[in-house]
Length: 181
Image (cartoon, rainbow, N blue to C red; front, side):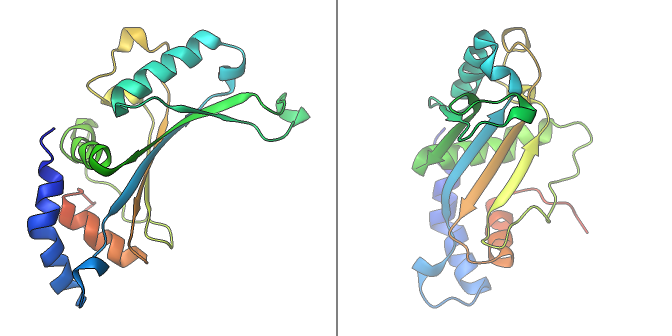
């Protein structure tokens, strides 16, 4: 993509937020730090083909290879041993993070059926926003025939904001479609 969202932030949003939040320094304005995508399945340890397919679609969606997350300890009740693959994660920073955020706002979220906006309650105390997707087929790059099965995905947008209200103002200014009150 042509870095339209980053240019929008640098030219308009940053000054607008500086005035809106009554900040003295432009460097105190919240900005995008990183976007983290996580997915997991209990079948990763037994079905290597499913793990490979999941890595494939996740790398296609993000443009970078996912990292395997492994269990730290054995849990007999879950039939889990230390060191087994339990999930995949991708961390996007810089231009890739802005590209993904632009794609999420303009393409992915509007593809949901009966989409009314994302919830305002998904912020944590540190100003990070998390959204969970039930299906990975909302991404236009994912082909249903090649994925194996439907799988969930968690997307965390980490901002430099110090609290919920500042992060909400930042994401709203960037174009995130929140639920109307």
